Length: 151
Image 1 (spheres, rainbow, N blue to C red):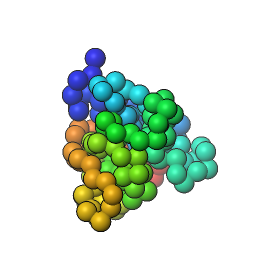
Image 2 (image 1 turned 60 degrees about the vertical axis):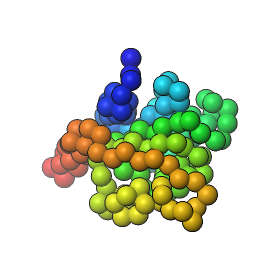
Image 3 (image 1 turned 90 degrees about the vertical axis):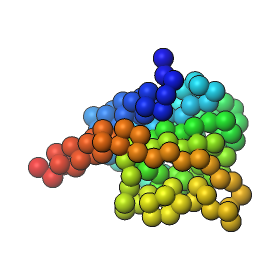
């Protein structure tokens, strides 16, 4: 049973590994509401030929469908890589309570690294961010994937 941020991040890492097994960049996500996993997803941009098929984006859409509401108030999104602008924007629009991520993204991170839309008071919603949860394991999945692709 999952009870900690690390437990839920391990589920997101399982999704990241599933992405890698399909030839996708290994990023995984889970959405938790009231202590229950309501959605899991991984990157499918290559498979679906869809630039929006990021793990956390797909997980939030699935969570909205599972909960039958577009507002994800009360939910935490766990994702193995710091969200980009698109995904952080969706977190604002969906009204998530928290985002917990693993590896920091120096090239595109939008919840603290390059940008911080999670706490931009010009927007209509803010959410809590916890970064670096199982960061080494999350980053290792990405490094191994890209090392194998370059070989």
